Image (cartoon, rainbow, N blue to C red):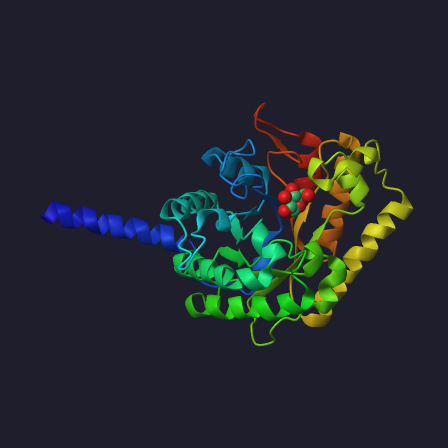
Length: 339
Ligand code: GLC
């Protein structure tokens, strides 16, 4: 009996350590953003219909590699909608929560901050009104599930709001979701993006509730799009015509990046909100020298503008890491974490 009680106590202690991780103190979003520094997206894994469908699964050793390389956080794109009932009560599969828990645990064990998002809920993008009850119900479950998790874990309400998710709809819906998240996670950092795919030019129309001081605002950056998305199959047949476009780092090229980051920095300052560049990257069909130059320049522009940043992505088509060869793509790695 005593032995049983001891193991029970040990089990409870172990679970608490996992649930709370190292950090039970909520950082201000400014501190959190600073600590995030430069990170990487674990893309093409948990936001595929099923993990592995797009050729990559998150292996525990990846989190160690990422931390050892000098990245400070991981953004974890997640297709929750593929693992929740289609009808009320829209229950999220226990097994899927367990899988996300494993990834979070491994990241925290390696002292990485974590951003958990909701990604590729396609039905929501085309019919946000019809899907909003389900959207909210899924978020309610995520919020409750992670309510005791380490404060090193942040939530991001939706990746790249787009299509029918207009300014008007987004500015009404996301604060309602946020309000519900706050019931179980009063001071957790929550990341919110702009419409038109987390567009920097849409910051102006994003309304952020004044009373909530635990928010980080996010944008993505893939400009010039014809360079970063050349040959990208999902960008349409046109993208084949962009093959061969380079990025030399001319004054004109640089000043166009600078102008966009000035907008983000100014918006953050004017609105007193930290800003996070949650995605930036150039697809593998562009030449590696251009990719490395662009990646370094954008990373530096983000950091100089006071933004945290996460490269898109770890080990797939944009990959800074080559999982087959089990090695970093050095020019990209240096562009991201080098001096
Ligand atoms: C967005 C999309 C993702 C895509 C990436 C680069 O995050 O959701 O699927 O790979 O941008 O285009």
